[in-house]
Amino acid sequence: MEFIEYYRIIRRRIWIAVGMAALTAAVVVGARLMPKEVAYPAVGRVLVHEIAKHEVQVTGNELQIGIPRDEDRFWNDLGQFVSSTQLLQKAAADIGIVGSEAERRLEHASAGRIEDSNVLQVRVGADNRDVAVALCNAVMAQLGEMWRARQVARVAIAREALAERLLPLREELSRLESEADKLTVPYQGSKPPDVLARLESELAATQSQLTTTELAIGTAQARASIPEGAAERVPARLARERVPRAPSRRVTALQEAILQKQIQLDEARSRRTSEHQDVRAIEAQIQALQERLRQVEEAQDAGEEEVNPEISLLLQRIAVEAEIEAITLSQQLELLRGRATDIRERLPTVRADARVFEQIDNQLTTAQQTYAVAQDYIDRLELEEEQLQSAALLEVLEPAVAQRMPRGLVGFAMRLGVAVFAGGGLGILIIFVLHYVDFSFQDEEEAEKMLGVRVLAGIPRSDVVLYSAAPEASPEGERPQQQQE
Image 1 (cartoon, rainbow, N blue to C red):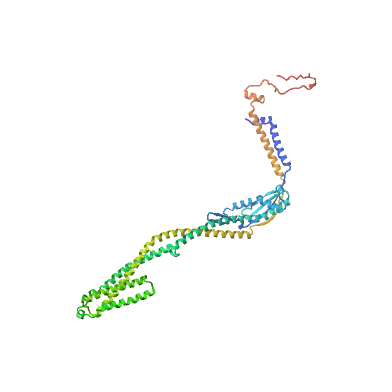
Image 2: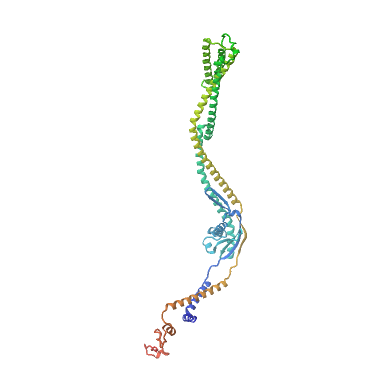
């Protein structure tokens, strides 16, 4: 389709485009002329200190206090807090505007960070410049105290949450300490692991002493058997020195040894009971010496000769001492065996108690550490609350000033122009839509073009009535005839 045809289509219904342009222009002009409320803005600046940015967050057993990594979130929260209704109502009450009057005359405050600085710009609108300035100053004054109260409330919530955790921890600590104390009662307050280590060490030492004592007993018994073969082992020169039998030195030595042991027994009984192991050992030694004395006397009665008295006395003394030593070692050996048996019988119970005690002790250590951490967190929160109460969070840098209200003529002209062009464009679009949905011939040219033949005659529109120049001369009710071709 050529440009001339588009022109013909638009020209045929140009009144639609003109009407739409006029309609949109009328709407813009009417909106401009309609009465509306005007809010006069006032702007002030506030310096935000670092402590005002502190964030308190308790996650599990972790406490974080300080500036958040994402500072943009802090500035967004602060901006939303400035825009809150609570802050606006508090500031409005300070300047004497309350209730529905505040809703009608005041505009919600807004705030934004100035580039990457710590300065916050606060903007407030009102129906009067003086009211806007007073309200902006009141908002900045209330912002510091209300932000302080908000931060202190968050710290208090975190501290209360930690304090609630301390109560079950205290109960758990008390329970574990009671169970641990019960396990130490059978051991006179000693810890079962310590008792187990001491018993194992004592058992090892006892077993070593058992081996040493058994060897010592064998050595003592060997020394005690020397007099039995003394005559055969004495050299020939000494053998010729045999003398007739005299009062037995061996018997005398044994009697003296028995007497000495009897004296030791009396002294031991004066200091200890008869059931004491030392008393019983001396009694056993005395019985062994008396048995030995009986055997010697029987041998003397049988007429046996003795060797040289000095040699005999020396050998008998060695034998007596060896027998006494063997008896003492035997008593020690029995005591050591009894002690080893007693330790072996106690070890299973002590091992079981030690395992239970170690489990409880580990739980107790963990609970104590958790309690200490929670208490440390509470102390840190109390310190943070003290700092929030005493430090300056926000500081007014610039008091509020009223901003000039633009008259908006340029903007109105731009809106009017855009509305005219938009209305005209919409009208042209409607023209083309009507053209493409209308399938009738618009004129002779279109008919010749579509049919390919020339138009020789045409039928005039049936809805057009031609009246004469003087309709009064026509007969009443008579219509002028339509022109026909």
